[in-house]
Amino acid sequence: MARAFRRRVTRGEARSRRAPQQGQPGQPGRAAQKGQPGPPGRAAQKGRPGQPLRQGPHLLAWLSQVSLVRFLPQVAIVCLILLLWALATGNTGGSFLLPAPAAVVEVMAKDFLKIGESILASGVLMAISFVLAVTIGVFLGMLCGRLARLKGALLPIARALAPVPSLIYAPYAVALMGDFFVTAVFVITLGLFWPVLFNTVSAIEAMSEELDNTARTLNLSARSSFVHVMLPHCLPYLFNTLSVQVSNAFLLLVGAEMMGMTAGVGWYVKYWADYSNFTKVFAGIIVIAVIVFVSNIALEKIRDKVLAWK
Amino acid sequence: MTDDATSMEPLVPKLSLKDVTLSYEGNGRRQTVLEDLSFEVRTGEFVSLIGSSGCGKSTTLSLISGLNMPDSGAVSIDGLPVCGPGKDRSVVFQHYALFPWMKARRNVEFGIRQVSSATKRDITAKANYYLARVGLEGKESLYPHQLSGGMQQRVSIARALAMETEILLMDEPFGAVDAKTRTVLQDLLLELLEEQHRKRTVVFVTHDIDEAILLSDRILFINNRHVAKEVPVPFAHPKSRRDIVFAPVYRELRKEVFDLFYDDEGEYYGAGI
Ligand SMILES: Nc1ncnc2c1ncn2[C@@H]1O[C@H](COP(=O)(O)OP(=O)(O)OP(=O)(O)O)[C@@H](O)[C@H]1O
Ligand SMILES: [Mg+2]
Image 1 (tube, rainbow over the protein chains, first blue to last red):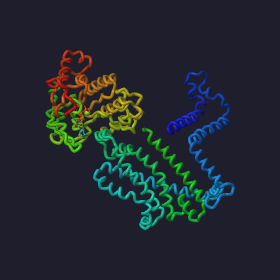
Image 2 (cartoon, rainbow over the protein chains, first blue to last red):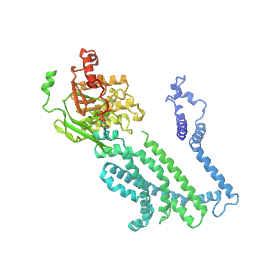
Image 3 (cartoon, rainbow over the protein chains, first blue to last red):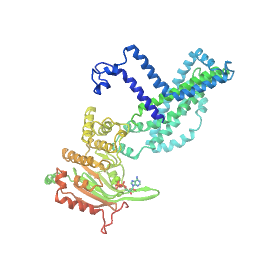
Image 4 (cartoon, protein in one colour):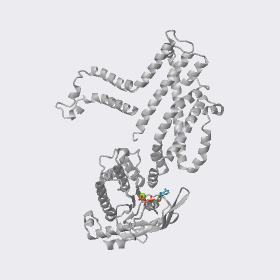
């Protein structure tokens, strides 16, 4: 259902993107190819007299198709929540615990420098942690898939350690490494590392015998086998894991930023909650929600690109 | 022709299996699949393995390809024991296996690259050539999931052919293609082997008696865990489908191979071992 919906929109998007090209002289447009008389592209230009005029409706059509139609259900739900929120606060300007939407927006506008800095700080933290967790987790997972003995030694211990919330190690990490940023990276990386590792191991286990045999009879070098067979085979599993782990990562982020950081979306919420400034807390929560939403879409886009062969 | 072949024949066979025994462990039970299986294949010879389903044809190929090791006995190539897969062999599996993340051309190129140090351009050219030969011109840039089962099988055949290894192992390679394509591919295989001066040694598994007669120099019937019967195919090279099908000996040969599948009481050798 959702898939069909997406496909329809993408097609519309593609069509509206192609439209200006049809009008370019010398480049046979689609209409011209269908055998219509006249110089190529003339049919496409009909009804669009001027260059500047064309851009307006075109952009609008594109926006309405891409943003509104695609996110219509989400937008509807968000609107509903906003409406309920506005109704609950009435025109009193909200209460101490529940500030009015207008107040929150005002705070966002006023505090946009610190919020911007926080988004940047959290983004850097997240990016480093994701890259580290994926690199180490996938590599170790593939190594375990290759070396049964390593797997036998490592995996039971890993499974025992994984349920320990990585935040627990934070004080020790600070003591050992003496740096709050490194500690935050460590906490998030570790939390992401376990699921990436386990899923990579089971991805390798799920590799079909035929594929494995083919790879073996091709006499691949270890490097070739890692890069050209095991890694691409693991990618779909990895993307599944990551899309599940995005929210987990943000939970960890909030926890990790509590310690010694001076910026970050998690830090922002926590900091103002300690001061009982719930207008700012609300602003921070909305920022986090938007970031998570955007991250999920970005991840989906990357996945569609990387897994074109699926 | 025959004289020529005999005079050039080396002392050691290209491929030899000697008293090979292999059993699988499954569900706590040990099942002996091959026992005292022996046969030899000369350089440039085309040998077909036939036998009822489950008689151990694929298992025999897996021993030659080096995916499996015998419990006892010896598998050797050029007199040297096989101890794993090697660059001198390419395999087409019964259940064709392409890398789903590589386009058709890339799948073939990837195979070639493992056995050749040619330049990227030469490898691409060779991949295109073999894909065209198996009738996949214009499909080079499609991913396996965009191809039909028969087309995927043809890509894997192209990959094995393009690797141009000394030994070609094929496990029911034409099982998944339609009858028309099947005859085209059979003719193609004969043609290519002939073009390459029959330097390549082929071990071919099939269920199809006509296919076995058309392609092979010798047919090995596997039953009771070993080679139960050996049927030489007397047609001269270069082979042509027309000459073979209309040869008087063809019917006799066909009956001889057909009868292998039935015991003295006329019972069909079932899938059991
Ligand atoms: N990996 C395995 N583990 C356990 N038993 C196996 C395995 N592979 C094959 N066997 C058993 O070995 C026997 C021979 O199998 P094999 O695949 O070699 O038969 P085959 O002659 O190729 O049959 P078919 O014509 O159906 O492909 C079968 O009885 C099968 O049950
Ligand atoms: Mg088989």
